[in-house]
Amino acid sequence: MICRPGEWRGVIYNKDRIDLLKKFRREAIKISKPLYLRGLNPYVYGSVARGDVNPNSDIDIIILRYVSPFLIESTLESYGFEIRNKVIIQATPYNTPKVYYWLDDYGKKVVSYLLKKLTSNEISFYRFGGMIDYNSLGSLRRVPGVDKRLMLIQPTNDGHIETCIIGREGWASKILSIPESIVNERVYMLSKREIYGRTGVFLEYTLSPGEDIAMAIKYLKNRNRYFREAIEKIQ
Image (cartoon, rainbow, N blue to C red; front, top):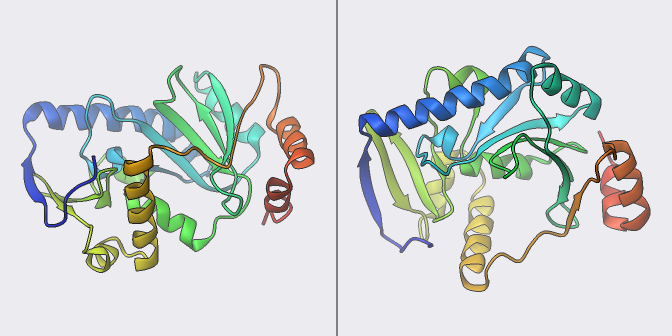
């Protein structure tokens, strides 16, 4: 549910909540470490980065550049991770296509990477939700970011402060160090979703068993002009 303008509250973390955050961070480190050791510079974004986790939180890891699918897959598999699902998503005709590897059956533990270079606006999308690098995971460092309710989560020494950003988009953009236009866009999109429900993405393709990323890219390039144009601009 989207927040109400002017809404805010302070949250103090008890031991159970701190322990839950530590649990999610340990799992995020376990997944990120092999990628980090291969020089892939993984980031964690969302509630695990902000600190406001709950038992149903996702672990979302992103590599903010194009890399070889074989390198990522072989790295994860060599450390004992089983890739349960491979999905290619292009959110809009003009967004960067991404590959998502599910490391469980429910899409709760996901590693994603890009099929072309990100624009600065797209990087700001991850900063909007809160994003930290591998070296920050173990220290329990938390960063500000906005959740799906459009509440800005600002970490404090003993918890966090939640503030509704509707009507305070300029202030939020300064806290997050991203353009105000990005904040306005996210407010619009999430508010629209509240009214009309999730409208889906432009392209979502789940790979068949035995199908590799290169095969899927070739197939999608032949069938979708916007996907082809995006891929042909790789780096």
